[in-house]
Length: 141
Length: 147
Image 1: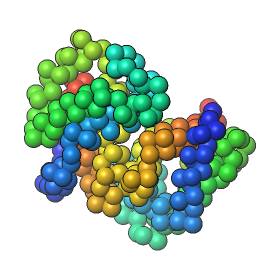
Image 2 (image 1 turned 180 degrees about the horizontal axis):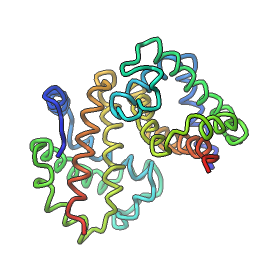
Image 3 (image 1 turned 30 degrees about the vertical axis):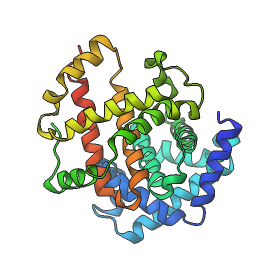
Image 4 (image 1 turned 180 degrees about the vertical axis):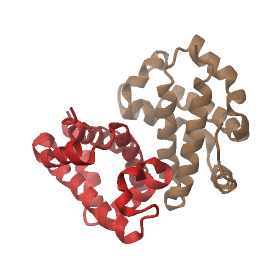
């Protein structure tokens, strides 16, 4: 459960990302694939070296979903239910991969926001994204 | 054993040369204690950890962070023998401090975020990759003597 302060922090950071979902998402995926190459096993349709267009397209899709989560922090389960079904029935991404994605997300935020990336923001986003990951893997069994 | 390519070693030492080890250590430890508050369990004697501000400005946190990062810095000079370099510290963390090795991974990840914060665009995916390998290697070395 996010506190009021934490929700404010999450929303503040999202304001900085909104409108740039594609580029943030592309960088997120590039970092994920570079730092944790085993994660590419879930993206074989993108090939071994996904090009910029592919990263932008898929990155945008992922960040737009994060945006949905931000708009529905009070009710993640309902808002993310279709995505949770998708992950449980089709994608079946091993849950151990979500912390890897979250780490890369934090690095994207830190490297872009730098001085503005306060410890409170880092804490709130880590808690928020971890909550999203829990919801996305909840229907696995 | 951590396997860095020649390029990765160069990226690591290139960036590390510009790191203010004293400051970054305190910031990394502080952020660990705020973002993952259960890690405060090891620092009962550190005084006021009651808020993010209190933690980030706590002099014991800063001092200990500096100590930890200086030790990490030594590791960077011995990437081919991290297990040997950290053997004594590994024994200490197991036998005296009783720290769950999972915490080494958490601190390593927070350190990578702090470096990203300081270096911005310069902290490219390749640089991140190299540093994540290093922090994983250090974490494994610190866990190596656990029994």
